[in-house]
Image (cartoon, rainbow, N blue to C red; front, side, top):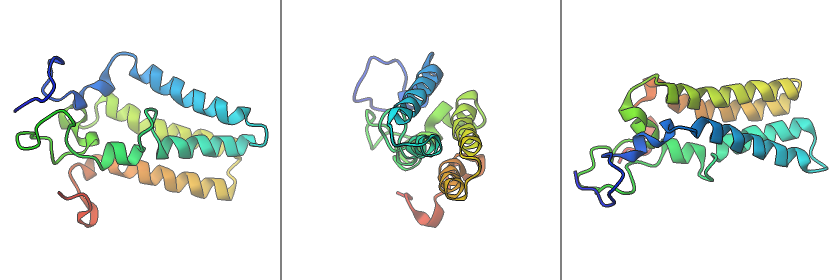
Length: 160
């Protein structure tokens, strides 16, 4: 395997940075700050603030990348050679913890959208329009994380 950038000591840092110390706290603080910013807008109700927080989280992750795009569509690693990279056909989600299923990192990244959905349902008092938007968002973000979908390309989308 040919590394383009060196010094990190790992063959593929894509598979380890989500397990780094302090990541969960930073993730929670980023999510909380998004929610508090939305709550500070005068014309946004609490229901809409929770729905917007959920949709922003599921559409955009903490680091301003699309959650679905960042974890489930982009393949390979940016610092590894395309020719020799064994993970060039894996999405970022499939590279986490070297593809091992049900690790604590994967459980955390799966549980956060579910807990956020439940909180959103609680604070929106199960309003129909909020529920539909949040549920569709939850399904789109959670379904690709299931172990049964590891390496699966629906309708040959993102096959190559």
